[in-house]
Image 1: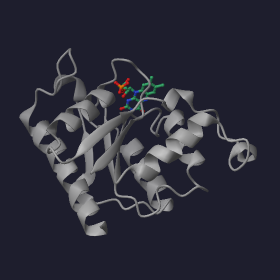
Image 2: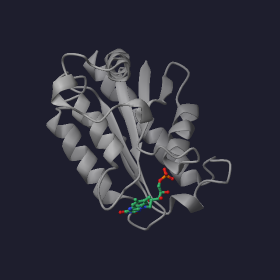
Image 3: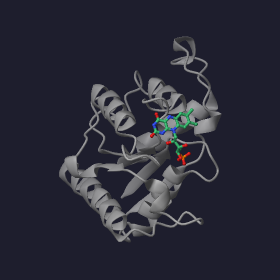
Image 4: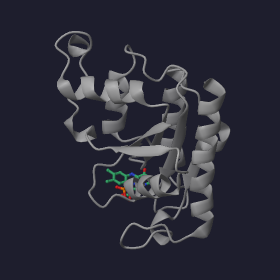
Length: 179
Ligand SMILES: Cc1cc2nc3c(=O)[nH]c(=O)nc-3n(C[C@H](O)[C@H](O)[C@H](O)COP(=O)(O)O)c2cc1C
């Protein structure tokens, strides 16, 4: 099984990317979690380049998503919404349909007590409009994220480790039900 992990943050030392790396390490042996590293390469969405003259970065993203059994997105909250780079990525996938019925996990993480819950809600809503399959157990909001990982980006909170394991488990179950 192959899960594509996408971080909504472009920061090199992103806490959200760190959570995805931790989830990848926690995944069982038969599940490979691959981090998508090219969010920054996507051009701004343009309907004129959606079906013709599409950029290589967009073609690559669509191919990666087609090949993935499931997707796991972990995002920060920017101004009470999802980061523009993430929404931009989803705009490129509206007409091509890679998210249709695709099992998708949604995690938000923030240093605040809210854990980026508004970005979580916005992202979940957009994915539901794209008709992704959003298993209940694959949804997670992570408050106070900076106190739960160390300087090296390793998760130190056992509760969070369990929660990340649960997210992967729910995605695996959704993949199995689909096959
Ligand atoms: C432009 C901007 C807007 C932000 N808005 C919010 C917000 O609305 N809610 C929140 O909880 N954190 C907000 N933050 C703080 C981020 O949650 C924090 O920078 C977080 O560490 C970003 O995730 P990362 O570590 O994965 O890059 C904002 C940060 C930036 C740069």
